[in-house]
Length: 146
Image 1: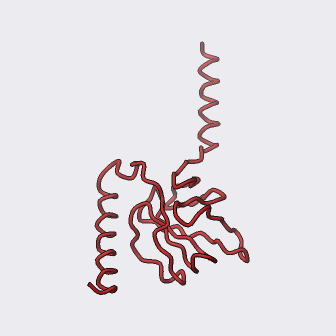
Image 2: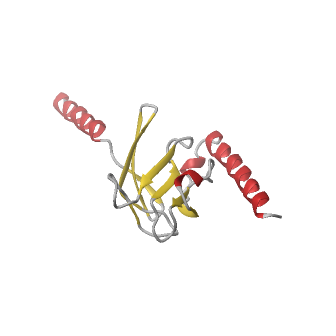
Image 3: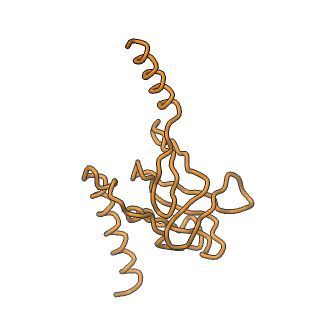
């Protein structure tokens, strides 16, 4: 099998897996870790479809300029983070195997906010302060009623 044929096959498998992740409830919640599975020379060479919980570095392994992965909450939305020191805002990756990014990622897709950390490949959601403060207010009101 030629390299080009293998790449097409890999993309087709990635498309089917992405469809499965979107269609089967709870599949995105499985404890898979985000992994860096590829390196390309430029951001426009990042594959259109990525396997679930995978990331691709753009700009080379030693001097990566971008990291791309699909949003953990919205699998159809791509997140592209700047790693270059010459641009702001910028993020840092922890390794070249398991994905970890600093600082947190705060994205809005279709009116829904996705604010999370990726540490050692695991997603940790940042608590929404507006929701937590309103729940605290409700608790105080409940206490006053008693």
